[in-house]
Picture 1: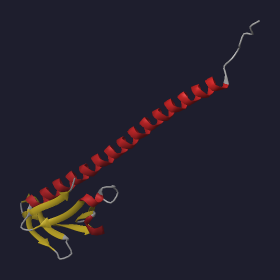
Picture 2 (picture 1 turned 120 degrees about the vertical axis):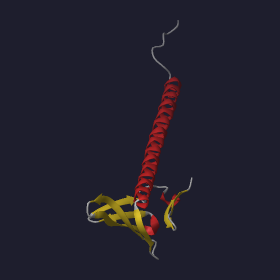
Picture 3 (picture 1 turned 60 degrees about the horizontal axis):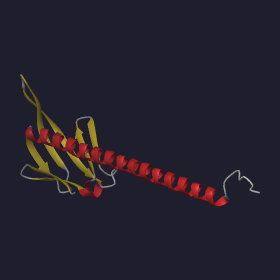
Picture 4 (picture 1 turned 90 degrees about the vertical axis):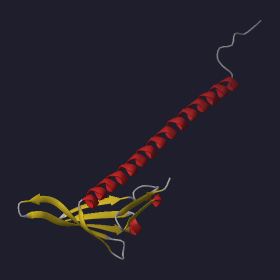
Length: 143
């Protein structure tokens, strides 16, 4: 006489659980990797956007510069023409100040202050700011 089996053996249940665990682990690994890559790519894009913004601002200031004075501490003082009026050119002074070893650049113009902070990026050691005279702008970004 044969007895009908109703159910699964313990080995079958363990094998199914192991397969499910492997599939779930693989899925979690792939999803977390893609999130990390997305975050890293976003930071990289923000980093290069900030470099390009600094370069374009410096180019604009240097193109309209009357005088450029580089101080011993690496800071730079630029007298720029902002507008031409009936009484003559309106000249304003722009100061580029290096902080944290050149990883933070402050741009001071009258009562406005722009800060370009590269310390927030993990690859900030690739960035160095230097203005080499005569009027050669060098912003180094190593890859």
